[in-house]
Image 1: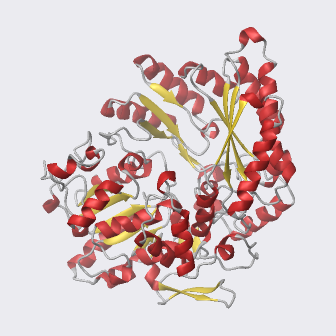
Image 2 (image 1 turned 135 degrees about the vertical axis):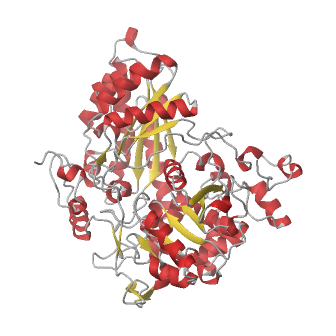
Image 3 (image 1 turned 90 degrees about the vertical axis):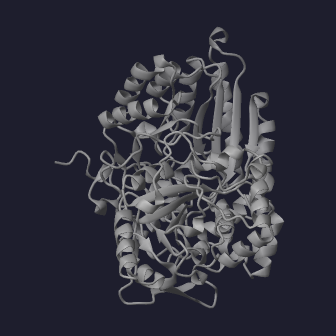
Amino acid sequence: MSQLALSDEILLTIDQPARYIGGELNMVKKNPADVDIRFAMCFPDVYEIGMSHLGIQILYDMFNQREDVYCERVYSPWEDLHQIMKEKQIPLFALESQDPIKSFDFLGITIQYEMCYTNILQILDLSQIPLHACDRDEHMPIVIGGGPCTYNPEPIADFFDLFYIGEGEISYDALFELYKECKQKGYSRKEFLHKAAGIPGIYVPSLYEVSYQEDGTIQAFTPKYEDVPQTVKKQICMNMTEASYPRKPLVPFVKATQDRVVLEVQRGCIRGCRFCQAGMIYRPVREKDVKVLEEIAHDMLQNTGHEEISLSSLSTSDYSGLKELVEYLIENFHSKGVNISLPSLRIDAFSLDVMSKVQDIKKSSLTFAPEAGSQRMRNVINKGLTKEVILNGAGQAFEGGWQKVKLYFMLGLPTETEEDMRAIAELANDIAIRYYEVPKEQRNGKCQITISTSFFVPKPFTPLQWAPMCTKEEYLGKARVVNEAVKNQLNHKSIRYNWHEADVTVLEGVFARGDRKVAKAIETAYENGALFDAWGEHFDYQLWLDAFEKNGIDIAFYNLRQRNLDEVFPWDFIDDGVSKEFLKREWKRSMEETVTPNCRQQCSGCGAKSFGGGVCYENQN
């Protein structure tokens, strides 16, 4: 085993030292001298969170199948080790070889949520890599960003050499081959980046310039050179069945957030909820073949020793092979003590039947995500659920023995009224009433309903990207309306209500739709101590308010104004396959409270058909 980067003395003084030593089951070990490219794969959060991320497991396995690439991992050191590394000038290191990240060819950072932005700067800072891409010399790694937040990379563009837009299975081979060629020919860092911009899906921020109107909106976003593409098209894996997938995933030493085998059954979603970014950027829906999934499930469980397998997708109920796959899993693994987890299911007769076979009903709860309390608001956001469907599903569940229900809603949606807010509490009460309609002898104790509300953040590439947000005070006012309404319900003792932090939502809004000007505030906040902002106990809103004020960032400009339909957005240079015309149509339909059918019922002409497969071409000869 490699010499550890941290001494025993340090390891004995920090929390969870196993986060930093590597050596996990199924970890890939190569001789760095035998490869052409060293790639440090980073999740900018603590080890337990990063090890739960499927995307990194897929790319780690895929990259390491190449003999000329050694992919290793790095996560955000927790605050105790962060302090020690700063004081002792210990460079951040990869888990596999324990070598400093700054000696690698690439540092790839997956960006899953906006609240990790200061952690990205922590990774660069502790790696002793200059924060700004323009300050890096020939010996520094190429810093590359990927993941859903790259669909508006502009607030963090200054910190990255390039971004990969889309799914990682497609263009990395071309990028690696180009890098080897440039290295062999002695090309400079700038020359490599210029050539990389020609690879589909690769965005190099330094090769584009932004000009602004007097009102602060973007006037133009233009390439600096003629051979640099005007738009960057997302890369998408159309053949999911044959796509790379880890049969021997890494097994963490420390208990991870999701300590289980994850089986991805499909990508994309047919539903078209107007607030949902994932539902738009992962279009079209592409399924994996059931037989291949059965093989993968068998291999992963055998190679990890995990006692739980979870099906992963945005809407598992919409996977056409679900019945066959679930029956296979129950038949082959449930009797061997393997728990089968089925998130993202619609509550219908089939789902309840399956869940009753694989869950302890007395301990488990059912989850509904109506997103809005009133039918009017559900129509605005295109959430295809009626009150009748919700109550029918709840009724079937209660008759089947369940008594715990979790309900997820959003507050602050466009056109929302006080009546819509109160409807959240009223729907919860109607569900409780439905429970007490079940004969007493069939009930399983008292009814327990937990309402959770998050605050709406408009995301790029969604029909609601033009919508204004609310202030922190307005959000909290909305939560108070719901809280009061819950207290006034007949069954209020059966209902518990939780709500999301409003100040975090405000910050997410600035990052989600921000431009390059926001980068300075992120840097200032990090320098002043902002870190692990996704962790409630570490989030300090005042740090951010001070950073915004110092750098002239007006929260109202980014969050509170409704955009004009012809405004140039910071992310308009990205072609994600869903046309802006479709999004405009859906924005107008939302204001008209008109529902759009799902992709299997009827094609709405969103543009994803241009990818040439998936749900767009189902049932066609």
